[in-house]
Image (cartoon, rainbow, N blue to C red; front, side, top):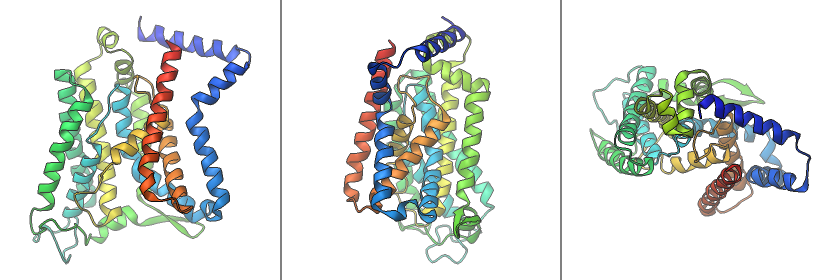
Amino acid sequence: MSKESKTMEREAQVKARAKEPWTARRVGDLILNNALIIIMVIAVIYIAIVNKNFMKPASIINILAQTCAYLPVALGVGGCIVLTGTDLSAGRIVGLTACISASLLQSVDAASKMWVNLTPPNVILVLILAMVIGGAIGAFNGFFVAKFKLHPFIVTLASQLIVYTFLLLYVKAGNNNGMAISGLDKSYSGFITGSLLKIGGTPIPNYVWIAVICTIVMWFIWNKTTFGKNMFALGANEEAARVSGVNVFATTLMVFALAGAMYAVTGFIEGARVASNTANTGLNYESDAIAACVIGGVSFVGGIGKIRGIVIGVLMLRLIFVGLNMIGINQDLFYIIKGGIILFACALDMRKYLVKK
């Protein structure tokens, strides 16, 4: 069956379900399929009642800023999940590109300058360099997935360790000796954490606009390009996509390369946002990204996902974690909450898939 036929059949099924009467079973399915978002909305409402500061402009802008800081890496992971894969190397790529960006953009008079004789280059050039590095690592992942038919979990687990090794070696290079990379040039910190706009007296950091641009670009790529159509076709059915003329190797390679470039954008942002970068920068960012994607409806079954869903997923996670912090929940419990969210979201996703079958 061709991609067009499958799309028409899916649309017909959606229209048929829309005409079905609202029985108790249908209402129950609707609630269960959206249970995670419903629970999160209830939690946000509870937090807002308990702590009145939660909905104040300063808190809202803080949540918005944190959402935008994590958004590019989630946009990258989303493409890998659409291909029925994942990317465990995302966090380490974020850390490596953050440390490289910060080291190149330390001020001339920084106390622990890594490259002593280096004058900070143009900020945009460093961003491009970071994206090239991230894209190259992503292409490395994509090559092994596409060429040797290895599962992305295995490939990215291996590259995670390889990239972390490079990161450990890099932070000990030059004059740094493993110290935190800080003392950033004002051109870098101003470009990322500076502000052109305030709401209610609270500044909106510039990296919010970088994340917005990334979101628009990724939406265009996913929805308006042949590459995006090929990505979804490949995720839905690799053999059918191959028969339809999709270049499986090139599409897979490009999905992972684009993901790596998005991780690098997050790394570039974190380099200035954290302002004191170590080998632990970017740790576990991939788990946040995966959780956001599955919350937002990107299916591990493959071929299903929307950019707006990823944005909503990242926003919901930030709302929950900022809110839990504001009502005094022990931060040590955040990991079990995050793990539970991923497990529950994947279980719901698989349930929907089995029901469709």
